Length: 153
Image (cartoon, rainbow, N blue to C red; front, side, top):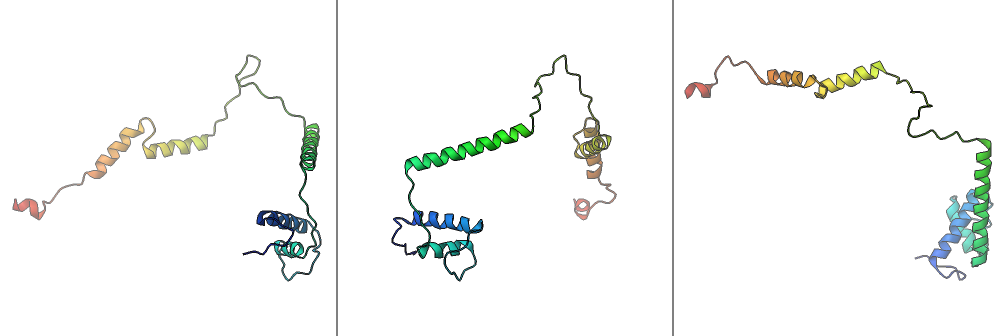
């Protein structure tokens, strides 16, 4: 069981503080205590356990201000991205008289392979009788000799 430092009221708050400190270490912050570990999460745990990381519970007003700042930053990024690239016009879903018909590109090689697979599977029209005839002829074996059981009866 983890022994909580005296400042923490719950294990969950302790884990949040350690994980946020680990994120700071991953992003380039320097460890504040000497640690025998190499992983940032364990270095962060040593920093928090040593009392070198200041933390506090934010008030509701501070949380709201932080959320509003994030929303404004996101909106600014979206606006900047939309100014750089003008959006193309959305085409009509239904064709109109003004739009010309688009010529269909035919891939002959793909169509040949598709037709061959359909014939093999017996899906293509006209291929079913051939497939049925082929299976019937394969099932029929020439009976030239009678088996010993048939001769006795």
